Length: 88
Length: 100
Image (tube, rainbow over all chains, first blue to last red; front, side):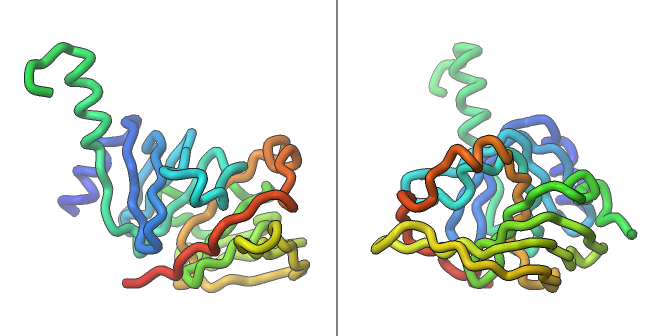
């Protein structure tokens, strides 16, 4: 429940989900459920040259069981840079 | 039809979806139904086989029922964007299988 609650606080933010097949998808977090299944909108695949498999996909549902990691670091860093925080 | 919590896939029903399975296959078809275990019913579907040697090969599968355990990603396909892509020119390594 702790992770579910935390993921719910990220709804609306841009996150990157890394899957257990090494695919990484960036998108806006739309929703999350009790299995930690994730729905992303406005997605793009990291390294589209290597992974053109989702070129025509605009939104997706990622099954919680195939998620290796979730990151919002790059987005947080970008926000800090925009706000002019030193050391960002 | 039972929803899989908040992150349900109800809004994808009767639209074209692209499903990536745990063994790395890509299956594109019309989503007709699903349940809380992400089991899917896909109508008029075909598999897209990616390779580096030739363009994408499309295999007609027909009606498929996929067990939820084997599903990695369900993508909502933008039909206009999809028809604009010339898949005979797309070359890529097949996706790796999911390793738990």
